[in-house]
Length: 275
Image (cartoon, rainbow, N blue to C red; front, side, top):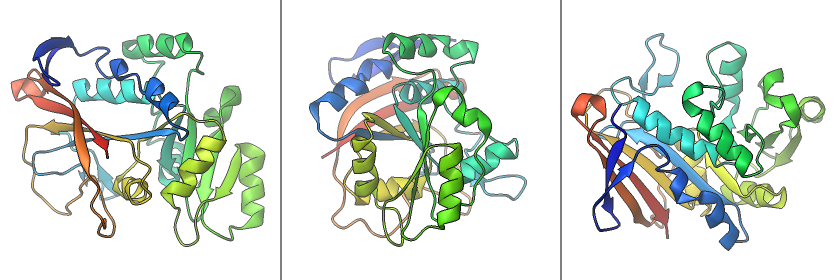
């Protein structure tokens, strides 16, 4: 696999190694300049803005095979490796219990052994903690997620079932109310900050990205633009929810051209700072 990409921005144009590209962003250093945890998210999207298509089974959506690729997956893993805690959903835990999901950060995969070593060099646990957003609290907690002292932190809405809260806390960690009818991004991130988390990676979908944007707590957005058009219905984009008013302004942080991806079609790795 050709390991080179081109840095297009900031100038000058330079050749960079794919391996270590996003580690060089040093997100943990960014977290030290603010009193609030540094929050970031990541998607791979087609040129027409699609991040997901219907699963062949008819159950839910999936990342399209036409945009998923090993080079983007490497970047995803480098972002996950820098997280103290990863935001996911109750659906992720249900999928795990049914055998349809796996660890988000795959440090036991030989391809990513360097990321495990990197976390150790930073004094971090092999795996980040997991934050789950759920209004219903109807999800299982696989034992593997709480092994070796790992925490599952759950954010829910007002007046949760006390017995269910007690059950979750006896197995995993803590449950926090972070909103009335829906979880509020600002309240959730403030609580994470108070718990000592410095880097927060949102590895879930467009509704969670919306609550982070609406709460004004997203610091950086990473997008991989795969050079393919997909079409199809339903249309699933990076943000789903009500109109963001005011609009969220983004400023380009970096642009890298990866000409070797997708059998030579190429893709762009772009990061944006929220301003």
